Image 1 (cartoon, rainbow, N blue to C red):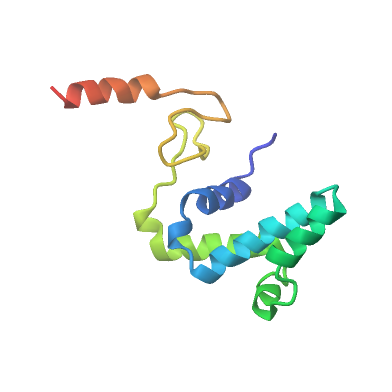
Image 2: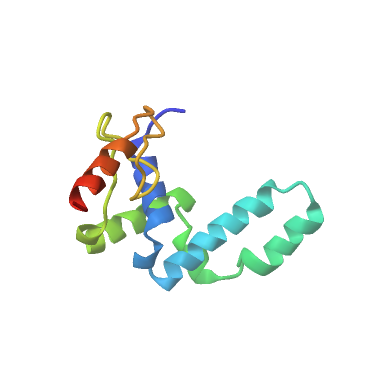
Length: 129
């Protein structure tokens, strides 16, 4: 898998900072997930159930928000969240390769494998003395 800063930053914000999103943004996020699941399931019965309960195909506001596609919507939300709340967010990056890691508390890089658990353990040991 190739690293793409734009994709990784968007995913990071959506997975770790939904508390900074509006109720509508979170709702559209669920619609995106629901529509993806409905389209990818092999069971027509399950697909229909997901469509009926979660996809909100008749919601004018949701459809307008997704007019440019799900990825564009997710990037717009990411940019707004970073602009409005960036000072309160930690974009955790690998100390070796500089790439975004999975969570704000992660201590191992998915990309290069660097692990800094031991470094934080020794800092914790010294701070408690």
